[in-house]
Structure formats: C-alpha cells, structure tokens
Image 1 (cartoon, rainbow, N blue to C red):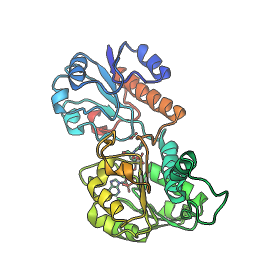
Image 2 (image 1 turned 90 degrees about the vertical axis):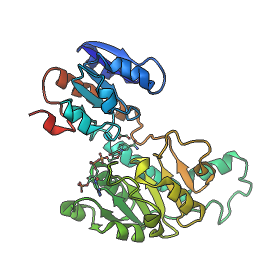
Image 3 (image 1 turned 135 degrees about the vertical axis):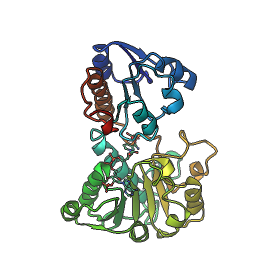
Amino acid sequence: MKIYVTSNEIPEEAIKILSNLGDVKVNPTSGPPKREDLFAEIHDADAILCLLTEKIDGELLNNAGRLKVIANMAVGYDNIDLAEAMRRGIPVTNTPGVLTDTTADTAMALILSVARRIVEADRYVRDGKWTIPWSPMTMVGTDVHGKTLAIYGLGRIGEVLAKRARGFDMKIIYYSASRKPGLEVKYEMEYVSLEEALGRCDFFSIHVPLRPETRHSIGARELSLMKETAYLINTSRGQIVDQAALIEALGQHRIAGAGLDVFEEEPVPQSSPLLGMSNVVLLPHIGSGSKETRTSMAVMAAENIASALRGMRPANLVNRDVIQ
Ligand code: NAP
Ligand code: GLV
C-alpha cells in the first residue's frame, strides 16, 4: 500500500500509524505540493492524507486509479469535490470535534483583541509611542461584557463559542440552518433571522461551512445592516465573506472593525488594503493552531486512513453513502 502525505509537517504520532499500514511517501517540499507532483503521486497511491490547501477535483481523481480514501486534515472539506469522489466510490474523511475548542478559543481571542485593541496597543508600546504613564483615553477600546454576540452557524464551534461568550457575560443571538431549542435554554440564546442577527449584534462571528449557498453570504447588503460600532469575526472560510465589500465597509467606517483568521486568498497578499487598517486583526489561518489540536487532527486523519485500508468504515466519513 502506498500512502501519500502532502505535508512534511505531519506530527510523528500520525506517521507512525500510517507506517504500520504501508509505504508512506511524504511531500518533501515546504508548503503544498505542486499540482504536477500531486498528479504524479496520487497515480499509484492507495490513500492520501491531505490539507485544505490541496484541491482534490475530478481532473486529479481521473489520475488516481487505486485511491481508496481521501483523509483531509481539517474539519472543512470544501477543497474536495465530493461529487467526483462519490462518483468513483472513494471515501472522504475529515477531522471534526478535536479542533472545536481550539477554534472557538481563536474566535473569542479575536473578539477580545479587536474590542480592546490588543494588537494595536502592543504595537504602540513597541513603537515607543507610550510616553505618558497613564492617561484616560490612551488606546481605549470597547467592552465585550454586556454586548451582543451573533453566531452565524450554530454547529460544533458555534456552540462552544456561545459557551465561552456566556463566560464573558455576553448576550447571544444566533442564526443557523436549524433551530436548537435545547441550546437556546442552555446558553440563554435567541434564534433570529440572518438580517436581524446582523442588525442587532455588536460582534458577528461566522461558523458556517463553505458551500455554494454560504459563499459570499455576507456581502455589501449584509454588511450595510450592521451597526457602525459592530465588528465582524471570521474563523470559518474567507469566501463566505465578499472581501472586497468588507474592505469597502471597513474603509468607509461603516463597521467598527474585523478579526479575520481566513481570507478569500491565502496567504493574504501584501498589497491587500486590510494590512493597512489598524482596526483589523489578521491571523494566518491558525484557528485550530495549538500543538495538541494539530496532533489530534493528524492522528484522526491517520486513523481514518487505517480504517479505510482495513476495509472498515472510517469514523469520520463525510460522504456517508459511499459505503453501504
Ligand atoms: P459544523 O458542526 O458542521 O457547524 C456548522 C454549522 O453551520 C451547522 O451546525 C449548520 O447548522 C450551519 N449551517 C450550514 N449551512 C448553513 C446555512 N446555509 N445557513 C445557516 N447555517 C448553516 O462545523 P464546525 O465543526 O463547527 O466547523 C465550521 C467551519 O469552521 C468548518 O466548516 C470550517 O470551514 C471552519 N473551521 C475553520 C478553522 C480555522 O482554522 N479557521 C478551524 C476549524 C473549522 P445546522 O446545525 O443548523 O444545520
Ligand atoms: C480548518 O480550517 C479546518 O477546516 O479544519
């Protein structure tokens, strides 16, 4: 069996599991493999452990004669053409759950950072601008406690963010594909329409997956519904927000700021106007970025491969109908 691993940064714990299954071939380059290398490697691979940076589409799968499983080391799987995998009977797996707390922590960190100007204030000190020992209005931000958080997509991460936010005494409203009456009681949350969530919130945090119906679901119209004092937080996928519209809204101070872990183009280009905005906190897609969580994700992906290669149903099968 050949198992192709697209990153040379996969924790040893996962590589060990894979080594017991067959020959593990790891992409030796830093960063994602070149498309032509991915083509060449997938040709005789029985399994692939890939990242969200790899586009797994029909063209690539046409060249994958022996592939028995695609294990994404991410909970989001918008980089994989599920229909094409399904057509070829290839199981696709993801890594749900193990990254939920860490990603919710990142969303909460962005809320606190933008509200209290943490990154800007750090730069202020380093740049030698702190000259008066204490003054009433230096680097003042806005409070988080008592404010309203809107959660767009109340799934695993959205729910844990609600729990975090309750700890900070925030009021919570949410919009999701379905209502969650039990969680409404547990976290004293109110279910509202997307428009109402945008209009009422002080912080709007995005946790829906990227799908055709969520792509650019936050555009110029939606941003215009937000208060001038409200912040947009995105730790889901950049393409859910129309980034050009967001830049315009931020530039014209139609919203107060943003905390962004994800972008339409990653890495975000150095020419992006976002880099020049002091009311925006930018992260390099590190929502699940703790050593513990990244190790758990890699191990989970490896275990999914182990199950598939042993002819068992992987625990985290995304295209559930692929296996009877
Ligand atoms: P999840 O449990 O599947 O939650 C997503 C929720 O979104 C679901 O509960 C679903 O609501 C809701 N939803 C789906 N389509 C919707 C729509 N059209 N309108 C309104 N709500 C909709 O997923 P998760 O584990 O929380 O992860 C969420 C996303 O976060 C992932 O897909 C991934 O893109 C992103 N992520 C990013 C990072 C990072 O590093 N920045 C890390 C982890 C995850 P219902 O339950 O009501 O059907
Ligand atoms: C990260 O973005 C993930 O989807 O796990």
